[in-house]
Length: 338
Picture 1 (cartoon, rainbow, N blue to C red):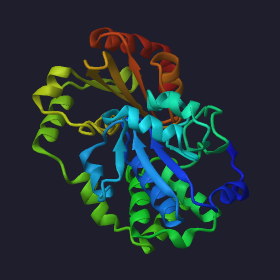
Picture 2: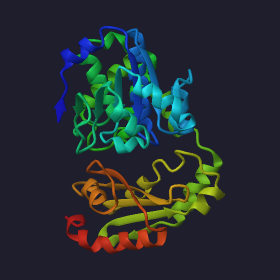
Picture 3: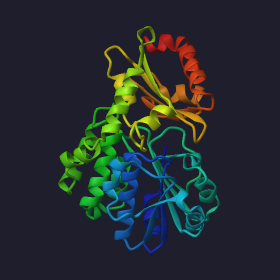
């Protein structure tokens, strides 16, 4: 679905407006990168723009927010709810359901502001006046690049915008290895490098800034891994006790699930992470080829995402959730062995 009137949107951006930019809860590189890029663009056009994230984001992404412009909704819900209600335009980035932003969703829904959705996940809701939704795009950051170009604002892409967009594309493509990385993706990245994105430096900032605790947590996680070659599946889990033991910080488990998928012959990987505060088990799913983890998650674990990358959750305890997952695998054996 691509349902955006570029000419109309451009006209809405002609005069200075109060604009809110919102990434999804537990934002990743694509959500933060696209938010910073849009925010910088809007400020360059003379708008009063503010990024409000539902909650905090990983330390390895904070170098992008060098001016501390990203506000955290849960730190002052009353003030930021009023900002949303009194805005003229709201950009929602890297999500397509208001449930993905928690309490903020009801205020976005109530707000009379014009809503703009830019996202690449499947099954978008119909809450925005301007919807740019394309499941064939590598990332929301790639979509933001194309939107800027369609708005004839490519000359506004400075080094900060270029670096933010590069980061989102890099992280959401698994460093350019996932299936939706196309020749067009590489052309976009090439232009971003020309406009100031330093790929080597960004890679180091994102991937080579690990704490000792994070690496010990990874080691512990891998020690829990179960490989079921009958179903071409690898899965692992983390208890709240383990997270506490290794001083878990937001973003520390990013990419852990991919280690399961890196095993020869494995087509489906999962990680289950206990979250006592929310009383849920958070689940990340990855796959190779045609095995659709978006459908698997939607049908079984209250989630969704892409064909090869999805998330979900379980309200049962960790033991029951793992048992449910193991019992589901025989139902998918034929698909996993195709």
